[in-house]
Length: 281
Image (cartoon, rainbow, N blue to C red; front, side, top):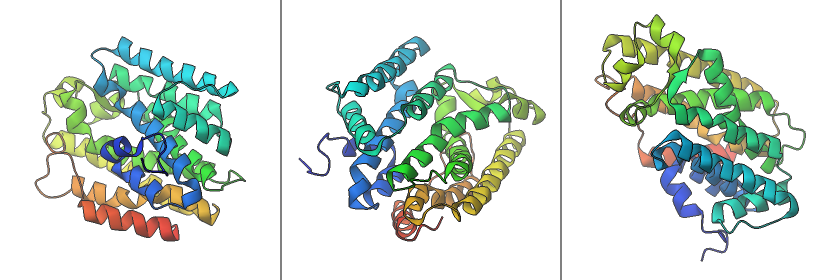
């Protein structure tokens, strides 16, 4: 057993969220176990829709995590590696359970898969899901003043939109639409069209609109990170991948409903290593 991974959660995290696995792996040793636990928790929540056959079963899994968090109040062990790793991180880093519960609640939207009412609703979802991961990661890395809240929200929006756009084919194949309904209709689209892989140039317009939102949020995050304590900036390393992901989405001939936009694994490795070392995103 890896002594740095007493709960055995690293392999699953590496498989399901390589961006954050590498972010934690390249972070200072003293914070690594707690970051891995946080990221594994976030990855597990994100995977729930793919692991269940109907929303009710997904809600059951979300409730299990709520109960597991309640159990950490007295140090109880659930016997589940991911939950026990998270409980250890909560105790050692004093992570706020309210924020973790907010992450669970936000993921209910993944189960319905019916799209968000508008861009405001999508932003709120990304602040609570992706943004919370950035903020808690910064806390683990020493942001004692919690000066990263604005950076976390902007980072959650920038990175979350990039991931959402990358996952359009996967979500459509699973019968999910995770984009704002108002924005879709402004582009002349209906959910059924996305699910069928149709829409042509109208889909490209939708992607371009959300891509601009992602790039704008990335600029905001970079501006806010100037005021964030330097050691905590390593938690924001995944932002270094936002522009490459968006560039891949806009590559000539790329069909955003048929192919997942990806980047070279070695480029991912190098970019994340460089970012965690210098805090540059």
